[in-house]
Length: 365
Image (tube, rainbow, N blue to C red; front, top):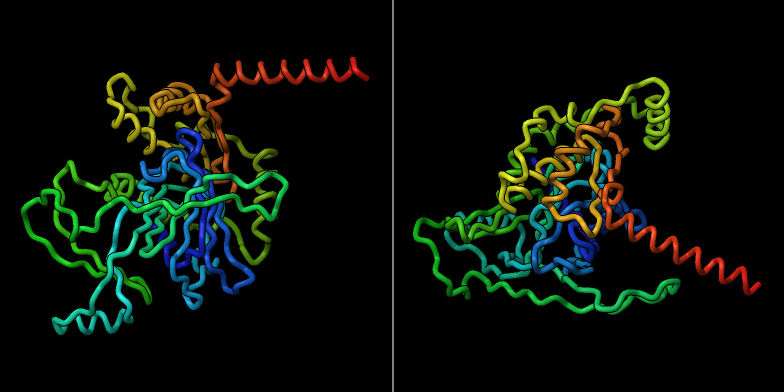
């Protein structure tokens, strides 16, 4: 099970300028043009190489004003502030699209005369949040990189943006060796939209990684997030959650995160894992933590291995949260900077510099 948001997408921005931290927002088509839905992303991890280290924005090349609207009553439990680890996040790929209706395409395909299809750029953004696996998959997108940030305080300045070229070759032009074996065409139909994929089995070294083990890990858990914690007709959601946190502080007891995670105490030692295995373990943990409403904010000094060690040895045993808040919009943020010696030294240098400037200013006055 996954939340698929591609059909609703109007535009979005992602910033992966800081190592192992991806922030941004996506704007979804609301019930009216005046009421779009904004979802904030505060994710742990990097994008794929084509987007890594960049500030990018993306939008459909041919927006559909009559497309489906994201309605909260159809997505109860979906959090508008998403935390958790990144999955596959790339704009380097292609997908076949067609111009006719889905019904027409299916009818003609059954007759053995499928309409012509066109290769278009494919956007694939995946993360694992409070709601489990979330995916934006879209064919025919414009992706731009910010080459000059907007000037601070100037609301009219959007900065400067340049289109990021799609360096991946369409499959029909890709001359690299293909694995032997069967192939077939997959038509994925979702509501009034569809996409066409011509599938062949991949050898392990050519695997795109989109069938991520995290999907299997969280697929069943995603449905549980959508539970009802209160009578929605009685309270406004924000007011309810404010009252709930007040109640927890006064009457409830925090539970250790490691206890809520269950078998997390059996995590392997980081020394026994290579870098890829460490990151897989780390993202598995972060995905489980996100479903508890707990996020890890990573500073620029921490590597995935150091994050995993910190989680395993310190954060999980020593930190707690309220079980009653699981499934609400409340998120507990734990920062590696609180444990980072380099961050502490940087703060002390900046504080000393501010004190020096303040003292000089006082002497001049």
